[in-house]
Image (tube, rainbow, N blue to C red; front, side, top):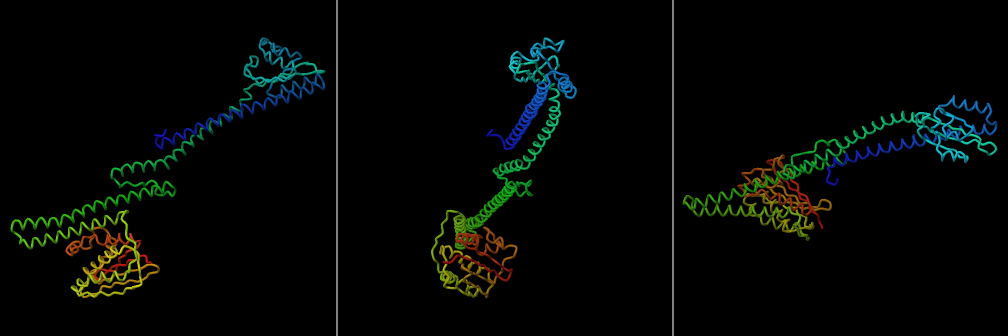
Length: 462
């Protein structure tokens, strides 16, 4: 049974319940109607006999006694026989022509002779059916003087039982039908969604993440929650698979472009079509770009892994930003950009100084690249509650509002051709986002197209 499907196990349990209910109902019916009801009839016959024994003890076998016997025979479904010789019950007399048929056995006759009441249930030719019989001894001066024999056809006893049995059988059939219908409902309600999930899981194992469990969307129970979690998992895996394919396509494209340049210029130099100094310069430039791309990919792969450990040491945030700004003074001067600093030197953060510097360098480099000439770039460090806040604002080309949610994705460029000419790999913001995330901080970007961009970073302080 351990290898059975859930549906087979549920139906087996339902069948076991049906069998248990049926057996229990039949056993209870047999006990109530055949045992208790017959016992009740025996008690009734015994009470009738006791009343007649009292009359016999008071009046003897007179007319009043026989009137009571006649009255009992006329008014009830039972048959009452009186005999002055109890031995006749053993021989079959006085029921001619069935004198050879014994109403009681030899042992029962002996019990009667000893003054005991005899109860029997057996087939009898005189009554032409199975009877319930009660024989009571009659005493006169403590001597056995006769016997009363009450007989009740069991057909009369079983008739109510048979009528009730029909009702019971009908009720039992209805109950079994209800159990089957409820079982089917349970199977459809519980097992079918699980089966659908199993089939979907098999397809997922084959790489198809498009299947969804739609039959339980309106349910709020555990099955509905499980189906919703399954659908969420499928959607997440589908997005991961799409990202993986996009990533491979992007990596292939990004690697192919510099390699194509390098190969083309190498062939041009070899064939004498391109000046060697110019060709080598371009090859070196593309090689540097290829190196940056590979380094960024390795960097991002490390940061996205759970095993990468960041340093955790105090950092004078303002001093770190001063040092990065000084490195970019020349590039800013080439575009006649003003760099405005408003740095709270008391702010001390905790983290990896090399990685935080990498983030600031990346953001400042982007700001200088995309800012309009003769504008201002502002860098601010302050406190926001218990956290440090770094804000970098430029007055540049900005980012369209519908593109803001995508800027942290790998290889994403707002303007692909212009970004590539400026030497970007499309991985800088993705790396920055992972670094800040590893530090337990947040990074947000707001922007207005053609007006500028603002980047806000929050980090924990000491």
